[in-house]
Amino acid sequence: MGEICAGWGMKANMWSILMNSNTQWVLISTMILGIAAGMVGCLAYWKKQSLMSDALAHAALPGVVITFLLIGEKNLFMLVIGAAISALIGAFFIQWIQSSTRISEDTSMGMVLSVFYGLGIMLLTIVNQSAGGNQAGLDSFIYGQAAAMVQSDVYTMIGLALLVIIIIFTGFKEWKIYLFDPSFAKGQGLPLKGMNILYTAVLVTTIVIGIQAVGVILIAALLIIPSVSARYWTHSFKMMLLVSGVFGGSAGIAGTMISTMGSGWPTGPFIVVVASGMFAVSLVFGKERGILIKYLQFKARQRQVGAQQAATNLQQRGLEEVGK
Image (cartoon, rainbow, N blue to C red; front, side):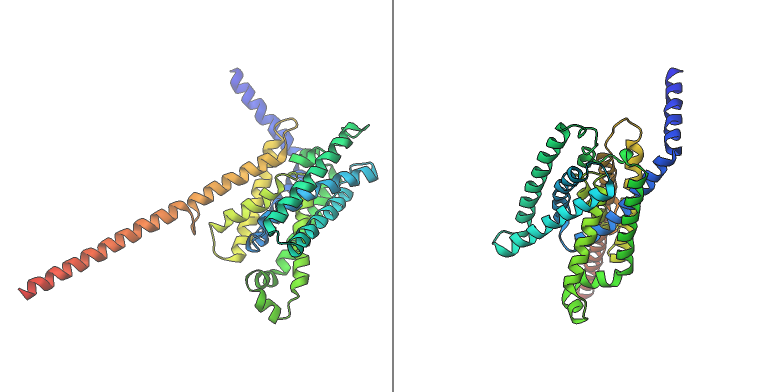
């Protein structure tokens, strides 16, 4: 009887949490963030720069802490601006190291990721040891804490995420040409340098608005996993964008709902675990490249070849009988 009462109590508590207006706004914001991240992740996937999102996410941390030190308060909009500047500086260093030395792109990304993240952790430790710094809640930028967002944070995240989605939708044809045939895009007069800048801008924007909810360590997973999962369901770039957005939005909602069930549970890990579950399902059941579908197709080809071989053998026997 006690277990039944406890179960009902947990359900009632969960229902009361979901009915809270602040929680609903947080769920909407993480859903829209997931959609934006899934769509931007598709661009990074086809540009073969999935690791770039991880490098820039870690590079954003020093900007968050330095901005807090300058303004003295946790204002998400200002922190996003600081994170964006820091991430863009990281992107500049990656390009500079790659073009000025013989160091490869992935190595330069790893160097920038490590140096900037180490600097960010050092500054964060200093801030947390200062008066009032520990109460600022900057630690939520490491693993993400959607429940810690206030209404202004939610509005900032929703507005910037919608801007990213609109940019991708309105420029769909240009993105497609830019990613799959840069030479043709250049011949058509499409400014490749401008597209590169716009691509970096939407990538950085998605990263910096997501670090409050998902954290600097795991925001890259929200960009990478939905797009890779969507690849198992379709060969169409347009459908991949839509499916990836659905996966990202669903992971955002489900992960946030789970994290609200416990006190102080970080949002990022739960969102990533949900997204990973979607990837596992896609890996097995995806209709284009899933393991199960490939296995069934292989067995079907085996049966087809076996039937053709049997028919050939029967025909040969018939010819032999006629020859006798």
